[in-house]
Length: 197
Image (cartoon, rainbow, N blue to C red; front, side):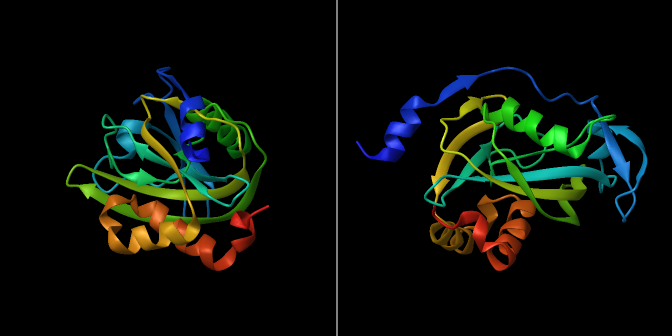
């Protein structure tokens, strides 16, 4: 049995509900200043209303990225492969608190997370829904076995950077738009975060 299969057998599932359509997200301007609040469902309607978000990239000691496949019940990009974890800080919550909360909720993981950069993007999923986010991007390391929240995640796997590059080039439509933007910049500007230990 190879290490990947051994690790997969150690993973556990949970079905705790951690996302709510009415959770209040933080609306921001283009300089990431707070300007109000809006429930999550409404923030993603039409072309989307700009709100604060985050994306986490967790690598193992070999420098492989933990990828998640979004659950089929997701309103936007269900079934697409994406980075380890992504979500939003809620009203009254700092980004630092939110990133650790969400990593625990979705994957049962706790690790140090290093801030890399933030950027704004808008991505249209269909006529009724989109992402429009000011997204903070972080990277961390963990070799702990994840606990998969099946309400959020339908698949999980580790992948080496070169293999991810090849897969993204061959099947770009299988990956979320924010993940592709973030991965290109991490590859270019932050190779230290996935260097093998």
